[in-house]
Length: 148
Image (tube, rainbow, N blue to C red; front, side, top):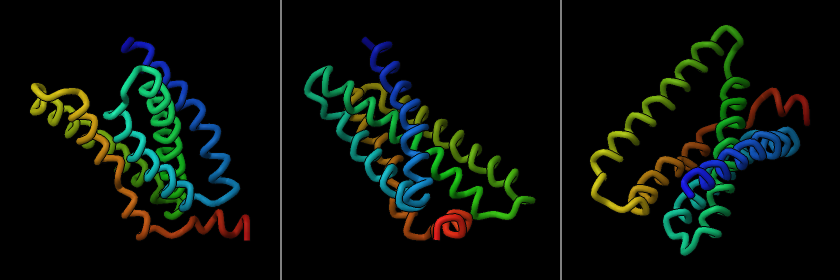
């Protein structure tokens, strides 16, 4: 059963890579990044409350779709905001941030090892709720030039 749920997440990530990036090309990087981050937080929280395997599978698929969408669109937004000579450093720092988050989640999982997976899922969902940061980010200048 664990394998099925993980496979569904990966299928969602594949779909998210195609769907969300297409929406970002059409509607703008910033709105899609904000929406995917907000919905990812909501769907991640919903996973913890899934009453049966079918609902769990649906929300894990949506989490995968939104996770990959948020990841790719926010990465594109970041890269399009900096000069070309600084892109490598920004990409590395973003990777370090992701790695640090994974380490914190692993530590949190260890600390919460006696709690249910649902409790951990709710706490982990808070990491996806970073929508408020989007209010400090402007639309990609490259996207604006290409589409306005």
